[in-house]
Image (cartoon, rainbow, N blue to C red; front, side, top):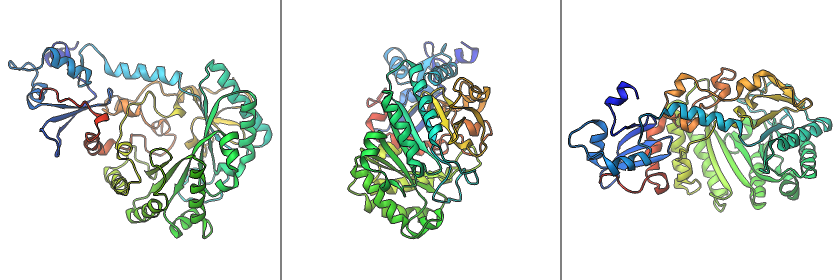
Length: 442
């Protein structure tokens, strides 16, 4: 135990470095002080005297002893002074990335039937996965599954470009996985224009589709202008989403927020009316996501605007407040920076991350699975920069976007809620599942 920690402890316990003080909740009664611990994922209410003791170690009339200390330790507010919390986070992360679930992000094509101006793949050479490569991808997935010695299903994300422009490759890979008795589930990242071209039996029984994500950039003419698609496409996509919901697929509607709140609200109103009968929790979710920028952190004003849109969605009962305002610890960051993550291009090349598709930073290929470049091992998350080690959100984001951190891609690295943390946490105090229900030291 360091000298500093010896001077500021209670019976060998100190404040966790991942404990944040929120202060008084404006609507809380009785009036209590709130603390949040990111590692334990707890929000804890404490009485005034306990709060004072936590801020003045060694008080002669301190209430912090015995059961009170045990309660605060269980809540994560306090930890044993001899515990190195940073080393614990690093150890947990290293262990997690080694045994992370198998996830294959497969580009069936880099071609697309839209031309979104913000797309990070803009300008990339158009490729389509052929039968020979699809067979090699299937063998690669099968071999990875068998080498794990586990019966846990693998997860496949069909990606592009527009992945549904090459459904033959998807079906060919899925048929091979079925024939090899490899359990798998899949998810489709799509613009939604071609969903109706895929039979429901193919989606559910051959592709084992759990769900799909459809991206919107506005409503009607705004949407069609942003994507460079014909008039009537917006309505067609909405109909296709209804088609997917009727098939009992999980659907994520992603709204790209570019700073134009008025345009976003107009889109929200249309989606809220169109899908008001869909089950939010079970099958439909609306995500509002700021477009990527070059800053490591999303500016606070941008995220406050995004949360304002979410609050509007919640008021319309088409978003779940406990999902919007949620901060749970993760075992590792993005799957792409784990040993279980595999990103496969249409020609069978392996790359570290889908954000690096344009850079074509090849680290291997599915035809020679044992020959992987050292750049792959270097990309896997096993450590953190000093800035992350000092951040109270480290247990939540585990370092954030690895490609952005390494300067390989100009995008946001940090957790989107970093600069609006107090707002999110104050909302979370409303949910019993997010906090200790008993007041410590009331």
